[in-house]
Image (cartoon, rainbow over all chains, first blue to last red; front, top):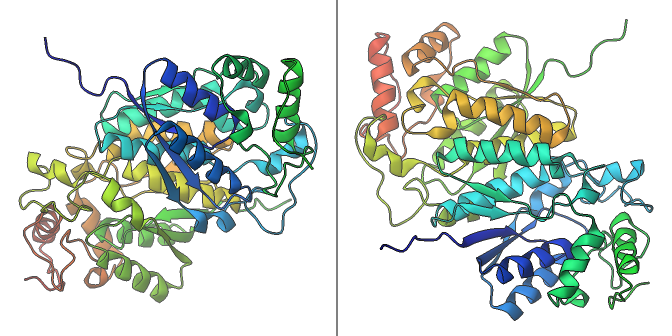
Length: 223
Length: 223
């Protein structure tokens, strides 16, 4: 019998944060052969890209950064524009809307899938989760379904978008990751890319809550 | 009564070729306020970008080139990869498949729409046409429909993708353009980005056929 080619190969859109790092370990546990792709879209927390690289190097996972830094100033978001302050507060609150980067997941997935298809890899994984749904339209199930259909008709290939965490909270994800011994100390979440995490932006607050929910200690250094 | 803002503003994905240049003139005729965005995705016929710039400058249309040249070698296409020869022959023939760039229209539209949305522009125009349908999946009506839906759920905005030429042949488009006095001499189609157009690649052959069908003369210089 002929062995199926590339069935377990998958491209991971990888930020170096908690969720996508947990997804990386989760996919490896499920025996996927993972290639990670990160994006520099001019985010102020480019520090996450260093975390992404370190994590992949330690696991000997193929890793690439797509440099679209030039885009940052054309995109209306407090995550990318110099003059805009990153808001403090809870992840799901209204003022977090300024952190939306228009079409971010669509742009990243289209490019990562194009690179995958060029090498015969039809599967792609995203670490979107339920905590994102309130503020980020491009993390909702309706978007992922539509995205998968568009990728299929765009390429004529049987593309699959895997989002196993899409109905989970960050606490649920951390619970999985703790069992998988994910080295969370190496991950970076904070939207302010300073030396230590700020502890006050939406993603820091959500991260700290998840650790509290799991009675676990976050070894990352906070200001 | 309050005037509606930006209703007639539109982003055009612009290559500097026959079809998108005709679409530019067509949209201007329809009183759209057009901003053009071109992409350097590592295509061998980067010469088209010079045409794009010249055409926009002459019309005083805002124009930007998004530089994604680095992507070229990661994408499996004879249009971008150094070792792959661009095929001769008719546009719709099977050997043209090597000229497909995976997810090209999806990547370009996602980025151009993100830039548009960042400035309140929800409309976007693509010059796909019926001649593309045979070889390029990302030019077919089923793709455009799916793309529009994905852009809407990606952003939560009422995005519209305009493709007025989608059921036309290149001859039909040229017919429109000749009436609009489109300066075809300034446009560039040939996949081989040499000094003169090759006259033998798919896009040259389709272009020459369109001029023949319209009893018109192509003033572009051919080898």
